[in-house]
Length: 147
Image (tube, rainbow, N blue to C red; front, side, top):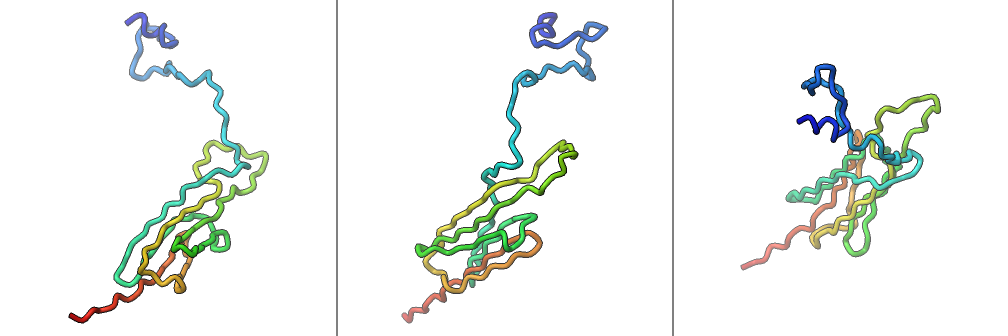
């Protein structure tokens, strides 16, 4: 046991023991220099999207907090692909501010979904409310076959 404190670089407490409340904790990363992410450079953000199918439509809901509808692009490509894209920007900061933590996602995002054949491509509706984008794509009415 006497080798452990020396081996892991910790100091002994005055009593010579490691107590459960000792502040002498070995940090394996303390001497490594990790680059901090730059707030000015854009990264890739994973926007979370839910897709549900109802009897009448396919409904996509994307959580995009802090974005306005002008900052989001919804596109339908010819081969039945729905693309939702945009960019989450960092607010300009005062140089005198000290940041302790930055957990908001910053950067570009793009999500693509292949749509089934039973959708009306020309009747897509999108709305944005309280940071949630809702895209509704109506389904084609199934033809009743007579037997």
